[in-house]
Picture 1: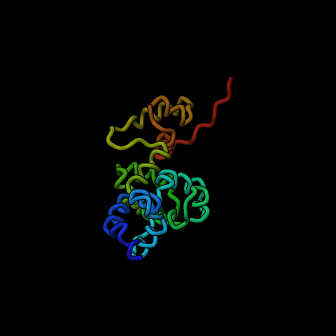
Picture 2 (picture 1 turned 180 degrees about the vertical axis):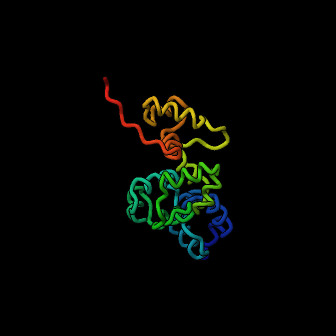
Picture 3 (picture 1 turned 90 degrees about the vertical axis):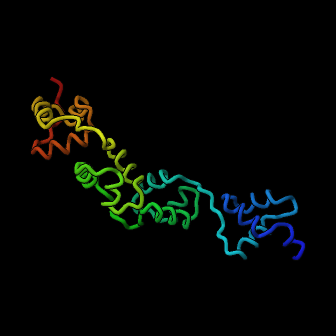
Amino acid sequence: MGNERRLFTDQQLIDLHAEGLIDREIADRLGVTVTRSMVSGRRRKLGIKRVERSLFTDQQLIDLIDLHAGLSGREIGEKLGASQSLVNDRRRRLGIEKDSPRISRQRFLELYEEGLDDAGIAAKLGFATKSISSYRRRKFGFKAHGYDRLFTDQQLIDLHAEGLIDREIGEKLGASEAVVGHHRRRLGLRATKFKRNQ
């Protein structure tokens, strides 16, 4: 045991662990006589948690949660090839609690229309980071704030009067269908049905 301890110092292990290396990689860096089990044993003795590689991105986790609402951490881990504890830790860091209510497009749009940016919406909805707001904004089809409104109420009223549906109005005005639909409802205009070919 005495010889084993002299093969590497605690500080060497701590430094390599801080670089994000897993036990096997630390052993490789420390030399041919050092085994993975030596590294893991010393790491546990020092009270250092095992490094878990980031097997998935934040975006992949958010996409999966949005696509399959109600999946447990274990089920998400199976789909991502990661442990349940890693999934749950990442979910907590992102502020996505297992039983948190899903944010509807309408609720998000209300805050967006108030002029809140990604950080402001994140704060209002209790998201841990603005990246979650940014992701949902893009998913809902809204552009980032910092630009003038793309059309006036009158432009929308005129195009609606022509019998155009929201998607067609959006194409003409350079806006998303969701934003057009929001303003149409705000103005009390009924949705136009698809026109039949004459």
